Amino acid sequence: MTYETILTETRGRVGWITLNRPNALNALNTTLMSEVVEAAEAFDVDPGIGAIVVTGSAKAFAAGADIKEMEAKTSVEMIVDDHFGAWSRFAAVRTPTIAAVAGYALGGGCELALMCDLVIAADSARFGQPEITLGVIPGMGGSQRLARAIGSYKTADLILTGRTMDAAEAERAGIVSRVLPADRLLDEVADIAEGIAAKPLPALYAATAALDTALETPLAEGLRFEKQAFAALFATEDQKEGMAAFREKREPRFRHR
Ligand code: CO8
Image 1 (cartoon, rainbow, N blue to C red):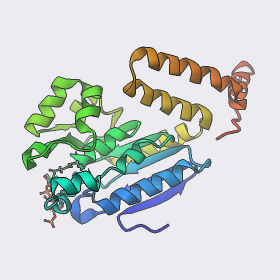
Image 2: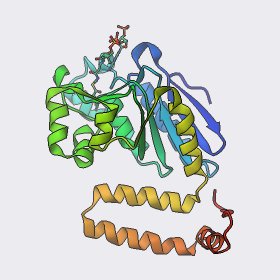
Image 3: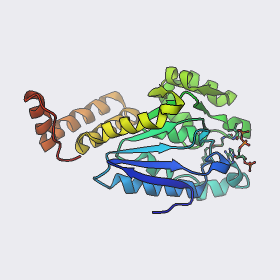
């Protein structure tokens, strides 16, 4: 499949989506959104794929929503067209998603990273929600996902001042899973993604659903969901194989992977 604003590739069981608008620092326009969503959904329904990586360039993961595309919009157009509404379909994919972030992850770029299950950052990464400097606020989940991930005071610092934080601060704050040297980012993310993709799909899907449930529901409801999902996995061949392999001191041979 050939796209205009992204590159896609399948490496083993990992689907790669590389944002590719170098002249606009990978600003997220509607074409790019449609293409990322289409590519992610295609990987998601493919049982040959167990992890999806989204990455950008060394300079920018994505420098935000495309300001030039949005600038002249009216409020009614934003509401009626549900400008950027399709990103919720990206957030909903069941396959584990990994944002490999180098350089700028600002505004919608930071929000796209926050939609992923893991955020692996190069030491060159810079995260921020600078929308206030444009007269708006985050619109792709930043105020909500950030507040849940790093608390309201740190979120307020980012959203009200528009400042950026480096990878080390973002990791301390809790929106970065790991920080890596920039020159090793893609190789190490490839290893991490392959490791995840080698796990059995039923358990991976149950895990991403449980992680989403943790963010979306009160604790008691989340605990009930986890207990049900845990029990349901005992109906899978992969649970039997995984536990038999442990007992027999050998590597598991998962069927659904
Ligand atoms: N949109 C459009 N074009 C962009 C964007 C962007 N977000 N960011 C960079 N570009 C373009 C520049 O205009 C420039 O193009 P040109 O060469 O044609 O002038 C090119 O990319 C290179 O950029 P710079 O020359 O500015 O590069 P610098 O290295 O000097 O600066 C920065 C890099 C600091 C990242 C700078 O480009 C910048 O500040 N960019 C804007 C960052 C920003 O404000 N992002 C937030 C955007 S708003 C948003 O994301 C809202 C999301 C929610 C939407 C929900 C809708 C429902």
